[in-house]
Length: 159
Image (cartoon, rainbow, N blue to C red; front, side):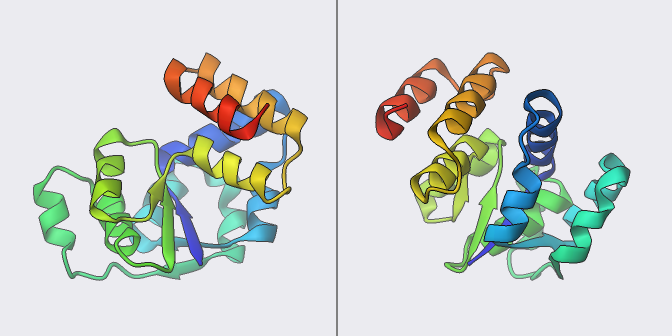
């Protein structure tokens, strides 16, 4: 399984690291095969020049051009369109906070929110209960997840 993280989710990860002092990037790099598309990498370089070292540990994949133009016509930028192409295949997962992208889950696309990825890390015993609780609470205070999702995650994870 390979995992890509969209630009907005990278912002959230860096916010978690900065404000909660939790090392999410190293955890992800140690546990997953991360990838960027060339289009996502262009955005990442623009917004995260101090974090380009991450790219050294990730695969950089080309856009597929299978349905890329149809995603552009739907209003997605090139980075999101390239990620959606990969999310349509079983071996690729994409973390996104974009509600428009997340709607594709209903069509079988492999997409999840950052909060859901945190839940997976907890269930696999990669993150502790205390750290998971702090992250979920932080995401709620930043309005990254709804009250309902916050409540559902707390119940599901028993935190």
